[in-house]
Structure formats: C-alpha cells, structure tokens
Length: 509
Image 1 (cartoon, helix red, strand yellow):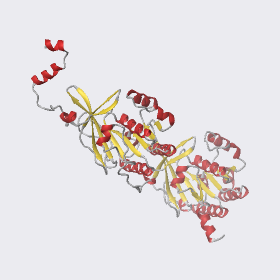
Image 2 (cartoon, helix red, strand yellow):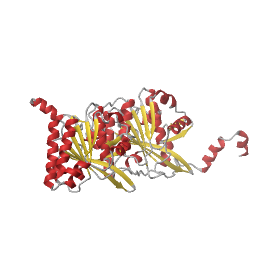
Image 3 (cartoon, helix red, strand yellow):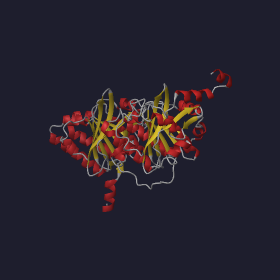
C-alpha cells in the first residue's frame, strides 16, 4: 500500500448512525480504530452500539455485535424493534449477534479474544461492538492481563480494517489503564437538574483528531440516540457579510417604518421588549405578512400561540395571513417548551429555516428558550451563536421578550445581556392615564441606521395597528405619570366640550 493510500485509509470515517454525534467527532469514528463508550446502566450504550451496526450495514458494511451479558439476543432485539434504524432482515446476513458470556466464563480472556478474532474473520466484519466489557475486566487475573487483551484486540482489528466499539460501565478513575489502550473515549451520563433528568455526552479522548469539546445534550427516541451539539460550539465565529445599508425590510406599518427610516436592515436581529398583551406577537405577524407580500418566505416559531389562534388573531385585526400560509410562503410552528432541550429546539428551528428557505423569522418568546433550560452563563453565548447562524443564512430575525414591569417607563427584563447582542430594540409598554391604559412604543436602538427615538402612542383595533403620526399624543406621559399636555382652564375645556354637543343639548347647557 502506497503512502497516499495509507493516509487515505487512516482518515476514513465510519459514521456513528447519529448525525449529531458525527458532528462531535468531526465525521465519525476513524476506520480501524478502537473506541470505548462508558456510562451507567440506562444511559444508552447498547442502543448506540446497535445504532452503529444497523447504520453501517445499511451503507454496505458488515457488523458483529458481541454480548457479555446473560440477557438473550431475542430480548435485546425485542427492545430495539421500536427504533427506526432496526431492520430484522439484515440479522444473520450482514449483521451477526454473538454471545461471549459462556466463552468468557469457561476460557477467560484468552478464549474471549480468540472468539472475537474468529467472529471478525469469519463474518468479514468491518464493525465490531463488544457490549459488557466490565465483565471481561472483572474476569482478568490482573490489570496487565486486561491491558494486553485490549491492546491485542485493537491491533488485530486495525490490521483487519475493523472499527471496534467496546461498551462498559463508567469508571470514575480517569487514569484507569483501559482508557489509555483505546483511541477514543465517549462518556454518556444521565444528570439531575432539579426535578428534570438530562442526558449528556462528552468526548473525553480522541487520539490525534479534533472534536467538539465539552458536554452536549442528547435524547433517546424512536430514532435512537439524537445528539444535539451545543450551538455555540458549532457557530463560534461571526459570519463574513456585506452590509446592505440601503435596503430595508419593513413592518408594513407606514408610521413605524418611517420611525425606522424604512424598516430594519436585512439579516439583522430585532428585539421586541414589552409586557404581556402589549402587541409584540401582532407586530411580529405584521413583519411576516409584509415580507410575504414582497416574496420573502417567513417563519413564526413560538411557544404559546397555536396556528388556529394566530390565524384568528390576524383575522381580528384585518391581517391577511391565511392566503400566505396556504401557499406555503408563511410557516407557523408552535412548540411546547416543557421538558425541552434548547439545543434540540434550535436544531429543529434551523432545519425549518433551511427547508423552507426562510428570509424572515419571528421567534416569539426568548424566555422559554433561554431562561429555565439553560445555565445562566450560557444564555448570551447561545443567543449569539443563534444570531450568527441565522445571519449567515440570510435570515432577518425578530424576537420577543417580556418585561417584568407592566406599567411605566422602567425596563426590567428577565434575561440580562440580550440588549447588547441584538442589533435593534423596540420597547412596547402600557401607560395608565386618567383611569385608562394606553399603548406606547419607542425605538431604543438601531445599529448602522438612523431612527426616530421619540415615544409614539399606538392602538390595536379591528382595523389593525395604528401608530400616531407624531409624538404629541404621548408627550403628556413621557414618564408614565399623568401630566397635562398644556395648561388649560376648566372654562376652556368646558367650552370645547359644549361645542361637541348636539344643538338641543347645547342650548340647555
């Protein structure tokens, strides 16, 4: 074999069967390598091993799965039947299950080694999974004997071109000799976070190869192990882009767009801050509808409003969303942010963006995505990475966040640090004046753009959102407290009121 062929052979990858795990490993396991997967019972080791085997044979390879446990293969495959990767017809053809329990008990490590070598040779396996390595370790006469067993298995299978996965219970001692004898170590854990249980995976060793460091979340479902790499580990660098300072993307609301000098910049991020009911979601729907009319596909991704409620809300203010939803130019998606993984939600969101070629996005509710599920220090990095990838894909993002203060000018948000990450901020609030509530909006920030910072009153009715032409109607309540717009006597106000009365009532007055 030439030097070039040897180099190509050493860099060949064997996909794991999990797209997310392949991302952690920068493509999968190295061809011919030996890798150890550790974790307590129930963390998913056996499922991952089977997922590798079925994926490998589906791509034309051959695999052998060896068990050291007393559980029958029939019971194990019964548990696997609900998995989508499971294919009954390949068992006994390109995938073979072999029991090594009796051999290990009768002949020890030496007999087990011979069994493994023979299985690889006879079935021409290119993937070998050994499940229950702890049993082999406990039967070894010494640490040296077990190290020699692992070393011999790795050398034999590397020469045979067989990628090997050994599954074992987690060892707390990181200096344990078994970890030094393999090319890589993958740790699966089930962690308690309050009342929740979260599955995590970490690549603690990958000899001579780059990997995504740190812990990443995963879940086990009908697809097997679904690994979700931490968003900030995938998208760490800001995208290189050419700013389109002249082009604007508006809300379709003339006076609001005027305040923004035509709208927001393409590929920018905008945060709508406001108390519940202040109009954040409705402004987002206006933004999507305006884009749809200009041929820009839009996506609503939220956590509270279902599609029927969103459409009813739009109908109630004369906003025509249904035709665009029916043609597919607008996509409305709602997810329940209960027991959810933020990385899983965002990976799904990015999949929708890619599939529908989205250009405008409304992410309705940062709190369910960032506040409870994420560690506090991680939230800013997570949001930065999300905005980076959206910008790189040509998406203009609009996000909503609730404020803690219902009335008045104070701006207190549950998520700190978001204001410095986004490009634009629009502040919506209620103001109480003479026993009535008024809606106010103001633009607090717009990067690379002129804007009008004045406070404007706006209203929501069956005719839609109406933004005041000037700041004059809001001038009396700039501080959130009632103060007169101008000094007027009671007599002048009375005369003005009388002039509005019908003639008959006016004469009585």
